[in-house]
Amino acid sequence: IQFVLKARLNQHGNAVYKHIYNIRDCDKCPRAGCNQQEWTKHIVSSCNSALNQYKKRHDVVLKKLEEEIKEYCSELIIDTATLPESRERPDISLARFKTTNKIQIGEVTIPFDNLIDVKRQFKIDKYKNLIERFIEQHPETKPTLATIVIGALGTLDAEILNNLSMLGISKDRAKKFAIYLANQVLYKTHSIWISRCNAKWRRTAPHWIRNN
Image (cartoon, rainbow, N blue to C red; front, side, top):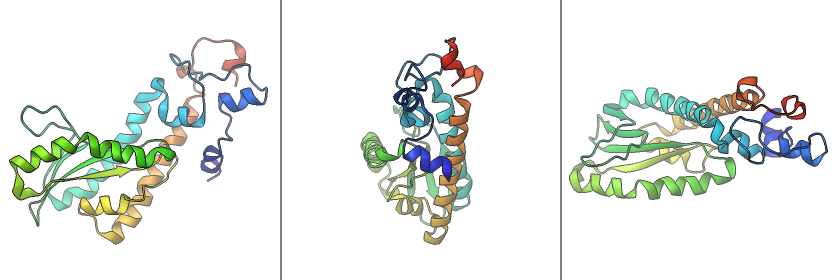
């Protein structure tokens, strides 16, 4: 809880914070290959040198979703192009439900918390044409897009319960499951924060960067 509160208030010891208070001579990210200002947002969601860690966090959420909905599905395809001549690969590329034969497509995204609405709309726009092509080719399946958006610091999208229900999860279960997913994200975000102090991430630099 302390980590989340301080991170949301930008009071953790990031490079910009330390630079403002004259603890460090530089406000740049210490990760190797990065030269951006190190705000909290940068550390937990925007550093190009940490993309692999962000992907691992994303994949944890996707795996938990897959495990949760597979019992409701007669067919479940993850991260695979499902239409001819299409390279688009939404995270849940196709979920066909046993009881209705309806097809659901799903996408997971973990942006910084103040960008949740923006990223949800971005995903909707990104896969709009894919949904339209699905409708043209399989009109009887009534495909739609479920966007599962959780902030890097654990904020749940206001639409997450509706989107989880689109994936076949009951309303009561969705409430508990959403909190569970948020906790998984927070655990991985905390690990990402800690890892930035790990020597393997850090560039060759003066002692004032290596030691702070």
